[in-house]
Length: 126
Image (cartoon, rainbow, N blue to C red):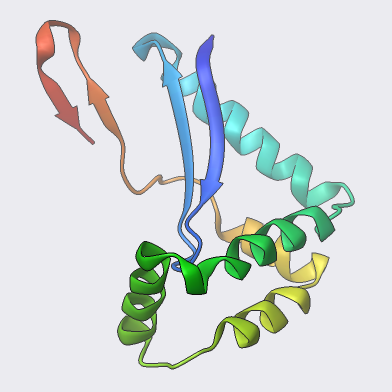
């Protein structure tokens, strides 16, 4: 049904991306399966510690990477804040399972943006 499907998160802006590689005729089924996974996440217990460790590890190398320094500064400018890496790590460490499930309640349809290539090279934006 799907050639690929994965989720990722942008380190500084909080954007979550669910990317899929599917045949057009499987779009509705794929969206249904994604919604079902959100429901499962809301109902079952979640272990968020690996995600917290992953995010903190990603933040640790930020001060040595020019792109990440620029991304962090851009985020701070947009939000009108001046948060240090340590402050972000503390916020992340204090996230609870309940807070994660509250966010899950806000995820889902309508999806904000989809890009799809059509046969013959034409592109369609939805």
